[in-house]
Length: 94
Image (cartoon, rainbow, N blue to C red):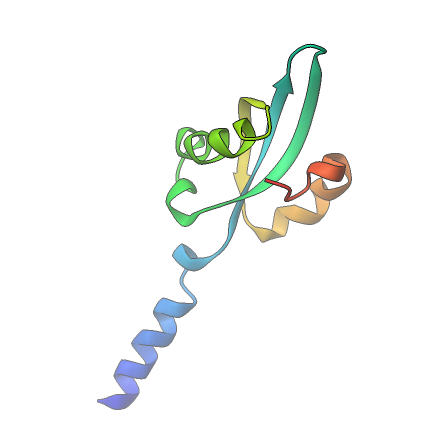
């Protein structure tokens, strides 16, 4: 019985629901116009759709004067390396 409980707990701990997810996005700032491409880590609840990701990320960007334009994609840790150089200073900043 203890072995089954331990196996269940272990399965839950490594389930995809606990995996980190990220979004790449575009944002802007006006006067003067500045554009940003970035990558941000999302909370688990925001991983299911681009609208949920936008709802989570938009306010974080707005705190620093940025307006979210769109979420380009949502991905897992396997997509970080290929986006790091393009995001530059905005890689995991927000």
